[in-house]
Image (cartoon, rainbow, N blue to C red; front, side, top):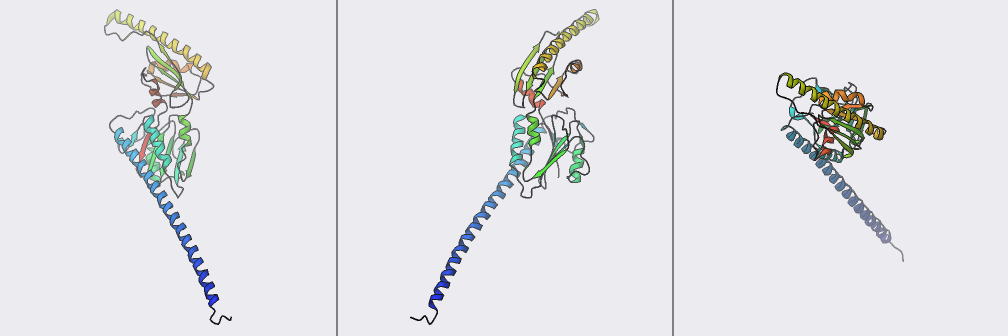
Length: 313
């Protein structure tokens, strides 16, 4: 039978169009799902950025209620607001790092820059961030964390930065910070009558610790010969205590000197001056308060602590 009206061709054409329509509908569904996933990622990234900002502001508010340890930081000029600087405890700093790790940028412009001293003019940073960073001088260097149009932080590290470096990408590269938190150190905290020697492999806890305790007379309030005799006896007590610390230090250096990268020394200034020459590891001086015998590991917050500054952008 002859197909005078081309019915068969029309049916084939209709079938082709229907198949094309099904394929187009499938492609549309795939594009819609891709768009939904993209929007979901954008929401997550925005939420992470917002949480990081809220965490930073909460830390600043808490820091405003307490004094900021100065350590070896000297300011060239006053920071705009005292609340811009704070020294978070271990848990607080862990939360900050966790928040920073969650931040993402599709533009791959999240920057971490480490400097051994000052921030040079050719650094890939806006001028106002460089100027704010340079308002604080540090002998240990500085780390700047920068998310364009969102926030900028400056961290003064617990140990010296050895060389200038920078990392830029879709996420913050925080390896240098984490490396410092896992730097093995020998800690020497000297105080009259009770000193602490310890080795820590990280900021978490001491691997080994030793208390050096001896009898040191308290200060005398009377005058005359009695006071002079008392002071002489006290000086002898302190000398004996220092000798005991030096002996313990020698044993600990012999056992752990090959593991520890630094010796962190602090405590009473007069005792620190007498101990210095007995240390053979690279020395880091820190203002270490007298340890709490019930929570000795808390001393590591000062040893491994970062001093943080929020930079307005």
